[in-house]
Amino acid sequence: MKQFFQLFLLFLTLTAASVASAQTIYVKSNASGANNGSSWADAFTSLDAALAAAVPGNQIWVAAGTYKPANP
Image 1 (cartoon, rainbow, N blue to C red):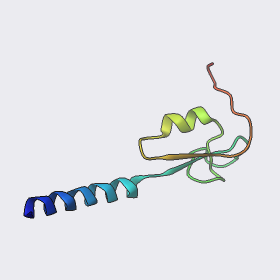
Image 2: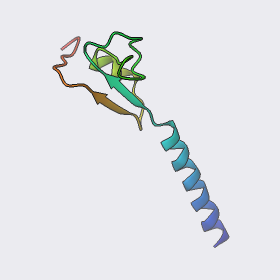
Image 3: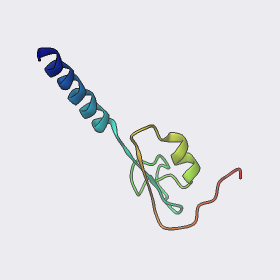
Image 4: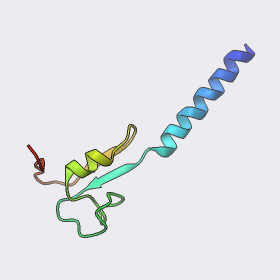
């Protein structure tokens, strides 16, 4: 029972760490900020850039508009 409890605590710790590192990446075609995806003001202007920057667990929020790949 003690091993089960220890494994359960390890699972909770890893899950919490994963959630804590999750990030929202923003995409807006007419953003004029830093183009780093950190906020709507600093959103990536290309969906390709956001997809390249994303890691598992991230969310990509895309403003309304039409987005086309740079290299179809």
